[in-house]
Length: 102
Image (cartoon, rainbow, N blue to C red; front, side):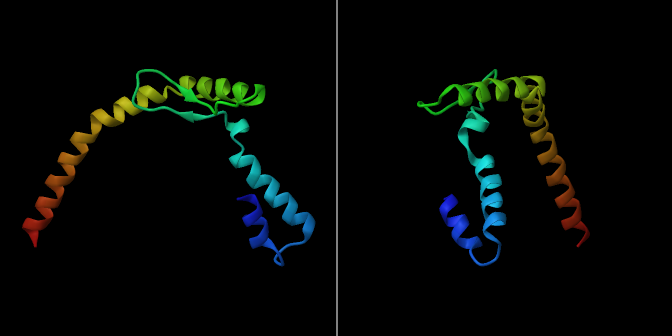
């Protein structure tokens, strides 16, 4: 994928600028920097990593899990899901009033 990005940048940037840009993009998609994916739909925080993850990725997974625990992600998800039916109901009522006014 990074090869394709680099190819797209050919001609539009100096070689040094292209290398720097591709490096920044690589940092955003390197699984070892992010650690893994958050598993939703459970009570608690689970970060799933690649089976061949090395120390850097494992450390990132722990850091990611800690960040999500500190941010109380589960509590926010539960609150949003509890509020969703009420929001949907209010939206339907709003739409019905608007339709009645037409």
